Amino acid sequence: MATREKTYEAIVGFLVGPLVRFCLRNSIPFRVLFEHARTAFVREARTYLEQQGDSANISRIALRTGLSRREVQACIGATEVEAEPSLLRKVLGKWQYERKYRSKSGRVRALSVLGNESEFAELVRSVSQDLNPYSVLAELDSARLIERKDDTVALVSQVYIPAGDIKRGFQLAASDIDDLVVSVEENIAHSDSPPNLHIKTSYDNIRQDAIPEIRKWCIEKGEKLHREAREYFSKFDLDLNQPSNSSSSGGGSVSGVTVAGGARVALGTFSLLHIAPQEGAKEGGRIDGSSLGPSGKKSGRGPENNSPKSQAAEDGSAKRKSRSSRRAS
Image 1: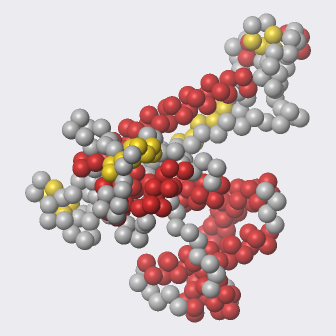
Image 2 (image 1 turned 60 degrees about the horizontal axis):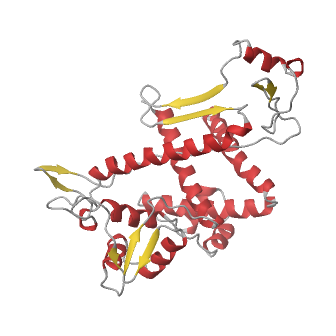
Image 3 (image 1 turned 180 degrees about the horizontal axis):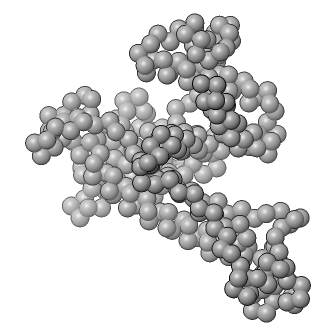
């Protein structure tokens, strides 16, 4: 048991490292991280106990978290975090893939937008009765996802990116991190046949002049993958394909077969194109008789100035520097 506890303590150290580096980059002191961690412990412990059907009182939360009753009481009175923007994604998903919002040719239709009985208001209320259609409209407009014309609104982009909104952007990042951690946990628990995809490909001495081309390639390939994923996943979503005899739990009958709903699937992708600081940057290699320095510009140096690594690459003996971690079935 002690070994297991020490292992999980080490894992917490791995996971907290990136968060600490973020704090250091942005001059956030330890005190702020500590206070948020304490509040999050209380908030998540209460949610966990409620999901388990247990009483989420102060004593149970204190026992679960190791905090004092006074600390728990203070955290419960703290401001709750805002809901993550997953509801906006759901609005976009229904708009794109529910049949009633498509034309006969299969294209996503422009929706009427004026008044509480408009098609757009109906769409928003079908996701949540607590959402204000005009607030959702404003959010989608600020994200440049829609275009208004007279009394209609058209969807012009299918990807929700909260550009310029750092708080909303990191709410999305937190949700993605949570999914990744759970995915890795499940893969480790089922090591013989990992149930989740977990692949990362990384190269660490890329020519800097190639960054724009690589960035464009990553974005285009990623968008294509997610278009295909949305088309495929939406076929099985019971919100978009209402079964007969549907129940409040999300199940129903499909082609005479009883099915249960409520399962969740997520496919995440990201790219990072990072240029190392000039000091200590890796040496560039030769291109067309000149060498590329760390800045990606031709330096005009002859082959005698190339590093041993660059010469090895010219001789065809350099090793392929790809680091790829894979956890897939």
